[in-house]
Length: 190
Image (cartoon, rainbow, N blue to C red; front, side, top):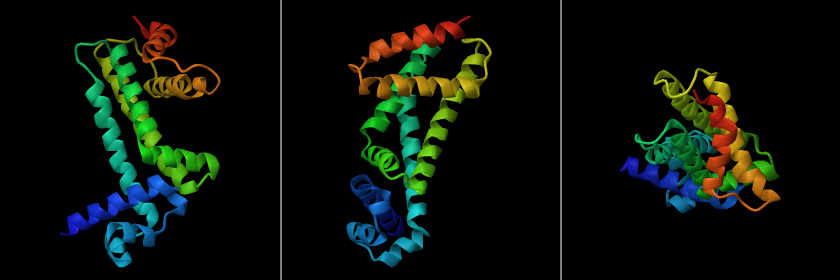
């Protein structure tokens, strides 16, 4: 029964954070939405911050699973990186919670939210870095600094997907892949 209650609380908090943001969500609200007493929340979580941490940890797992599902062993490293990055950013763009949290950071700059989004970005970077290191070990790409390369790949992808469309027509998935290959992968190719 307690696992069920904990899950109810997590689902209610996710819904509340997605609708109202972190700052505007109260533990009373979460308790009401979860149909539990406020004290019940504190048997599982010490604070609203702990609750958000738990939720973001689940989101990180979901994002990694989505990225893994986009990878096809029969495709090249470059195609797989493109597919995984596209899927990761698609997930972030469509997931109500991450949309609301990104909006809150932009509008209010809530430190706790900045922290959990930083944790999310770090997990994404670590995932990409691991894929780059695997590709180097397999001899698919030449040696490089995997940390810097992962950072640049993610930043370029974010720029092409989010920044570009602020003042231009959005780029197609195919066009992004083509640009990524042209500017990035040709430099890593053997």
